[in-house]
Amino acid sequence: MSTPNQTRSNDQVRETVRAGYASIATGQQSSCCGGGGCCGQVDPERLAQAVGYDAESLANLPDGANMGLSCGNPVAIAALREGQTVLDLGSGGGFDVFQAGEKVKASGRVIGVDMTPEMLAKARKNIEQYRQRTGLDNVEFRLGEIENLPVPDASVDVVLSNCVINLSPDKPQVWREIFRVLKPGGKVSVSDLALLKPLPGNIREMAAALVGCVAGAALVDETRAMLEKAGFTSIVLTPKPDYVRNMQDWNDPLYKQIAETLPLGNEMADYVVSLDIEARK
Picture 1 (cartoon, rainbow, N blue to C red):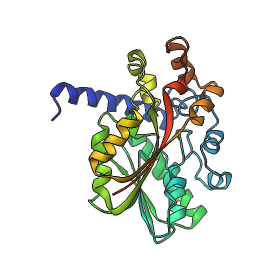
Picture 2 (picture 1 turned 60 degrees about the horizontal axis):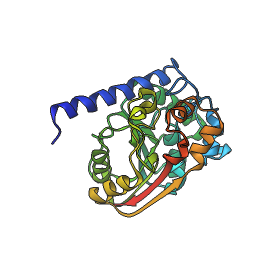
Picture 3 (picture 1 turned 90 degrees about the vertical axis):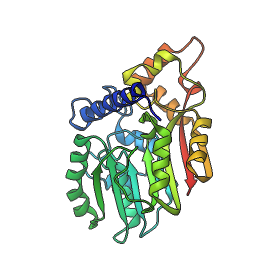
């Protein structure tokens, strides 16, 4: 059971993240650390293609849905099929929701959940353009926290998430919630940031690194343990180091700032990795 101090700390983390992503949604800053990308001065389309999205899918998206906040392509991992019900955690402007909607077609349904009202407003505004471009009316967006999903038990075939679970101060609860909402046999397909070894304490305390998907990341082995404890089977974790190397090569300001803070002789890729997570209920 959480202590009052833990509860206050968790609430502070959520408010830091919420405020950061609200600023992105309203255009007050172009990314979670003031650059462009998650988080840097990277063109969103270039970043999306680098992590596995194809040009055709990106071209079909509503304007502004791609804000460069991805660290992988969970839609591709999931191999979505027509008629499935899909849930996207931390859906932002609807980037993965709209792509998933085209995969599951008219007989399917995609639900995006985000805790930031400003992101929710942006995503809902994009629905009309999505309808016009695709002829589909199969997506919706709900306000909620990923630790307490506004979704019934055993109602979802696939859960997606893209660079979001690492932001949660209570990741075990997130995995329990994912397990709860999945149908028996349902699948989780997540791209997230994870740690190969613990980050130095000063980096974990940096607010920019927290909102930028780095400081809150769990160790790869901890991620597996959380999935197992929640009840998942057929767990496959696939580290993808190219994401971090690309962010360094593109002079991402957050990654540059962290790299300059690391102990001498260390680099970001020694600590942080993009992780594809697959599992079954």
